[in-house]
Length: 322
Image (tube, rainbow, N blue to C red; front, side):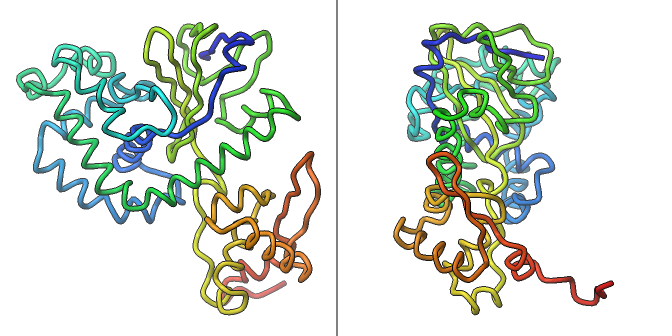
């Protein structure tokens, strides 16, 4: 397993945030490989145009084929931002400053030998940047406000645990192999790589629409752990139309989002509704017996009652009750 070695200063200054470059690379990964069911509709909408772009540009296709390995992604694709929430073009500045030899060196860590097209081509950094700009413009940016709310909601939920549960609570659920080991050690993945010493350095946790946990760095002093938003934060299906007709679209959405225990703050972030509106819907749904509620530390959590679960997911037509 691979670990981060941290100290009190690293943890005290650690930040959670988002990254347009990370989201763009995550979108590229989802387009090129099987993805989770909640990303299927997004992938189906964009994979055709993506395939056409690669067919028109063999250099792009070769970069994609050689930049992603089983346990490693070419370093030029995974540089963390200098600050949370930077614009994509600002994040691409380091990439576009790299020469062809550096791009090839990063690719050789993933796969070797490289194909002739990458050995003979020039301006590889700008080719990579153009590919990422296309991915961003065509598949991410049109839906960016909604996509951004989901990792922001995950960050709010996760950082709220810090005062009550410490870093072990914050890291719980970050990824299947991520955990607080104690003694200043964070297990970050299952791969057998040397321990990374980030004591006294800058550490950032980046929430993204991705799968798996990825380590990245901007050496010598900036490191990051990218983790997937999951469950409610990865997106839920739209409420069924009969449920919308019964409750109204926004109230139905709040009910659907509460499939698992969720706080008012998280619902505000995921739905984009105001705090007053969400609170009003929660009160009505609770009074109607469609939501359960309990206090957890400083937050109140809401989740679907048994009645609501039957309402939201009615029996499949044709299935007989025993």
